Length: 205
Image (cartoon, rainbow, N blue to C red; front, side, top):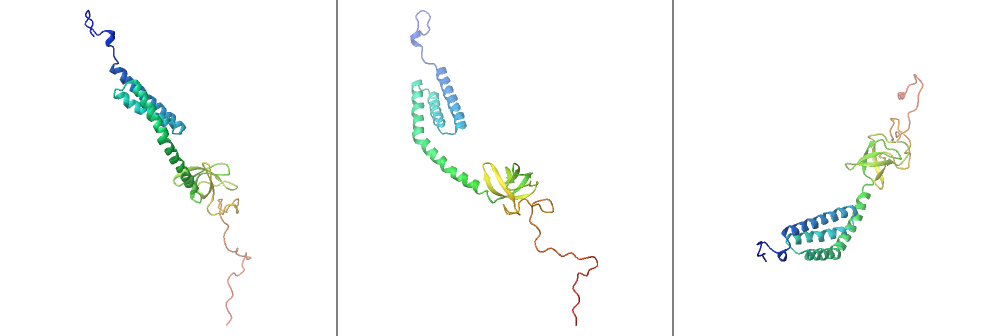
């Protein structure tokens, strides 16, 4: 209704302006992003469902739906996601955990190269193209460049032993070259005094 004196709308014609509706979908979108960030930190698939509800309310607000409808859309979509999607997603997530553990167990027996001198306390090796923290399953220190074998995985640490030494047998004995290796095979050659003939005498006719 127009005022007969000013020709402007009276207070009875004050309605919800488009700017208010636009600001509402901004708020819903911000809420959706915040809930998504919380989900990334917690990884419980709970806040992700509410983020989906807030995203649905964002679409409703952008289409010009009243605030009550936006809230209803947020509540209904969030509940549907919690009831229908979250249990399935949790089951799927738990199914993938044993597979990850199996992949880690598959690293046992793999060959690696020492990148940083490795002792029974700390060290680093290159395993499957990746750098791992490592420790030596024995006494002494493995020098850089030593080929090793993974004998166990302890959390995020690879427990290694030299590839030419059986773990637990002679791992503390150093080879003459300074590394860890097996002693030379075969009997040692006897020592002869100077001038002693080492060749066999000729056969008698």
